[in-house]
Image (cartoon, rainbow, N blue to C red; front, side):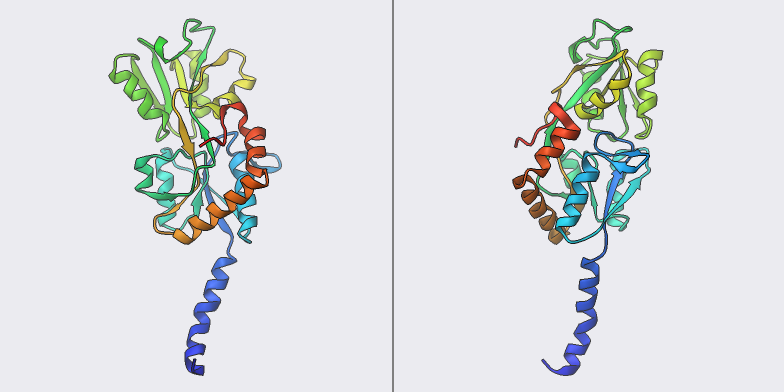
Length: 255
């Protein structure tokens, strides 16, 4: 290669090296424990710890970029505008979302669950007992179409939609009468009912959902790198241990 051609190429080479050493910016919607939450010591949770391990495998620093929108599905726009490189936020892989982002192989399997205030509705034990009742969900959550289908089938009265950061309000409403039941992924509801003795998770396994990390459409290199890191983290026992610690019996690594 001629010297002048090499000199012209150097900035590109340096740019590639610099980009590879940039922090891995991870988008996440907080609060969504046990996937991600803020503590006195900073961010914590399953996805937080997982992505710290993934970033380390990639030789990059980890950087959290909180998503503040009211509709969870709005989080995917941040991939295209460069707000973050990937999303790890208890995200279910769905056909609609696969049109907006490229998903890595799933890291866990879970499903929707149902929560009620058992002092108000002792008769409710499953989605089969919701006739005439109001179901609370979060905007853009995968529980929303499940609840809407129950209403369409006349198995529930209506759906009340809360902004994504209003989960505490939604749970409070179960006792005050703002809604009658709340639907959400099982690890999340299990976390929240621990300090709410009137609330109980009365049903799990309503759906079967694959959870995964996603990147901007077409970012094949990053998707492959994260997927390779996940394989290593499963092989060395890291991901199974994180699932056991943070998600408990309401999630698994099963395919």
